Image (cartoon, rainbow, N blue to C red; front, side):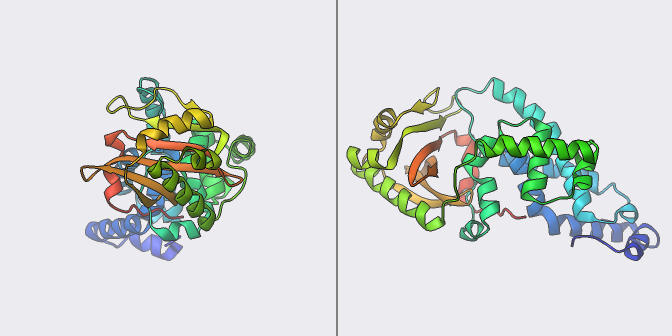
Length: 308
């Protein structure tokens, strides 16, 4: 439901009962909910905060006179973006006091997410970390333009900037991201192959095989949030990373689809202990992201739908 005709809008604003307007508002929100969640999640890197943003979006949406809304999808995205920007600034202050490195909250995603290459890249752990380096408004503009292909005038309404300013921000954000994003698109088959080799090397404690898979300058980032043990700074270099991974030897690792890409899950006593996502460049693992903070693992028992 991308929009409504003027006649339909007039009917909503005029003769329709309050119950009818509420039902129409609910239908529109439900129809676009997965999209709105994805927008908020890509801006925040936190599913819990994205859900809070959707609650705020709903509260504002039910108060809107639908008779004035020509494009319900665009209007909902605008509300969501504004609420996400408010939450993003709050998150920034929260991250300043976070214990150790902060990683995005991982999502268990359906296998078909990988078929939409652009969507899969945009929600990948590696890309979300690149987006963390943008200013809040830059991040909003980049997500809305590059991922969801919104027009500049629609984005302008969402971020309270002129279309000309949005174009400049988009250009700056695009260049910033291009300099930091993974160097090439990795096919799902290639990613699975690298991850399977990595899994075998870790589980068997085969140091040489592990070193063959890791890039010399690989970086391991662990997020324990001060709740569980994790390195308080990124671990850099194949040798140092291999030493840390040695603690996973003999552990059972389970393949999973996380944020649109193959990843590994470690369970202890039946509970998820670690979610490990990877960044792959030129056939080697250049980034390892180990999320251990229990507060960030609660959604990993069920699939989360992301969409454009």
